[in-house]
Length: 217
Image (cartoon, rainbow, N blue to C red; front, side):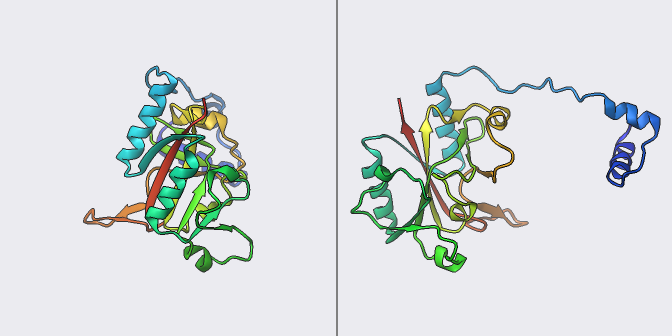
């Protein structure tokens, strides 16, 4: 079956029309899924190092800390940004942010996008991170909040619990994620390029992405 026949068969299927016998037989055969799900063997520490390398390659700023150091680190990052307010999801661990820091703003239904755009920074957790691609995945869980809070503020600090939340590859990530949840895949700050390849950051999301690798073991 060539590409044309495949396309026509999909159109017939969408229209509820019966396919020719040859086409039906071809679609009854499973597509081979024998591709590699991971490229190489890594220890948990090597996996985290690869994630950090690829995040930096995407122009994210990477920090490492532990539970004792996360509050002072976040205070320092928010102060350096000059953020008077920080947007937080409903179940962000309270000890991550010091009471002496910026005013915490929660994502309430009544807040407009214009109001959220005036918030200097947002701090979220994540669902997991992919080492081979330097990708963060948010799924709308309570420590991450609704999708809009990671897209509107210009400065996003994302905390990744390592090594538990780090997987090697996208296929491994898909096996752990719930496809029914609102998944947001983030590879570096929001950026685009025009026809002359001039890079512009902050077009569809945060201009600055900082990632905190939080050691939990």
